[in-house]
Length: 314
Image (cartoon, rainbow, N blue to C red; front, side, top):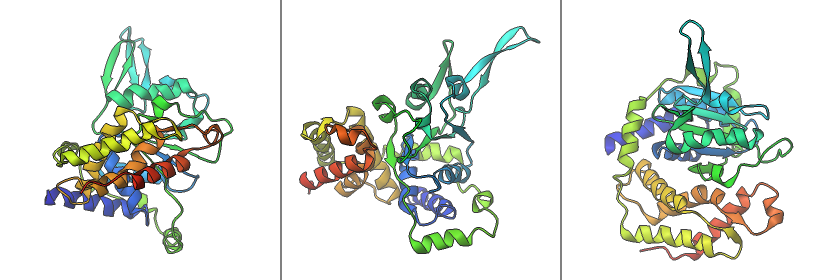
């Protein structure tokens, strides 16, 4: 495990050359990647969301595609389309930008629900189907989607089925003063992203993904996870609690976080740390006034309050 951990540390160090002062965000992104999950980043423009996605792709030597989601974007613009080839007299499938290892779905909530749904099969099955023919996507495959929490004009809120496909939902947050000064100092030089070189190959990422399931979690940890999930279904402030998919994702996220933290087993602290990022976008509140806005901060606060009330296994 020491050798694998060194690879992870090297990866974090490499991405940190570009994403300054956000090691927690980088670690959460890698948790999602190592679990074969997808990441939703909700934050203001200019916070480094696109740069993070590009830095991950370059660091693991993977293909990268960016899709700018707009109201006129069509499902075929994402998946691809069959085009008639006059020379052969047959239709040939022209692959869309979804066929990449890291796909950035920029401002995903600006596309219509029909276009958003084009991602569902890809995110859940790792494949796309066009005219009854299924095409496998490359491995690893990860969608990193972004959305602006303060802009609601011309947007289409993500439906629960779409939100549930995202492994984690996170925020970037403003940098500290000293960190922002270091960011500014980089401007006269070459863009750090252009100088970033791979520190690990994509085949190694696939092997690391397989290692995550080997991280041990005793029965009390499973009971703790189930109790957290059950509380989201019984809390009077919550209209709809976390689905079984959420409990599976919390278990896998805890394993991955334990792994990148250098632990051979899952502890309650690993579960507590990951729970707000895994569960906050999977609950729907009863307060309709809150639901009219971005509910992420309020949802996260409720999850954190629940965690304080649930006894931690010893």
